[in-house]
Image (tube, rainbow, N blue to C red; front, side, top):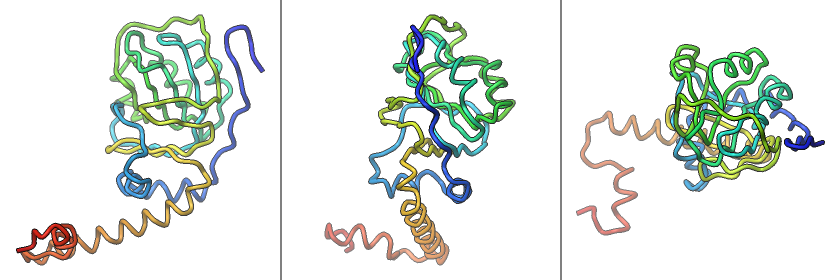
Length: 223
């Protein structure tokens, strides 16, 4: 469906609850390491305090500095969706602020990922509403369009498709298809167990450590 200014595509289904619950216990470095260390959204700043972001991508592509399509998206999204916005990396005009954040939270939106600017920074911090953005700016947006809802978008160097899973914490954001989640969760758990073993080895105080040797030995740097 489309209007003269906004193309509207169906909302993606939400990721399974069990998958999202498991991911809430994962840190983004373990997920990133098992995505080849090349995947992930880069260049965005976290504007909330500490809340974990885990949800299903509801995507918007908009003209730089214009948030007409975001207004429509807020009405269409379902509880559990993350609003993921390709704003063209433009920081001239804020695309979202306190009022849109408050409304989105009431609608059950679990967070914003904005490749553009936001404003009302203090409100996002006080509410601890998950929000990652390119920048912040006091200047408000235009509301003329055009825009597209639920299409593939480019955010922080990553292609995000409607329905992808989004995970964000203090280290950043990773995004991946639902179909990859089961294997990724298993691999991340393995990474966590491996790191726990390393922590225990570090605690013994020995200079020689197996995890160091594994890296240094192939380069002849153990002696």
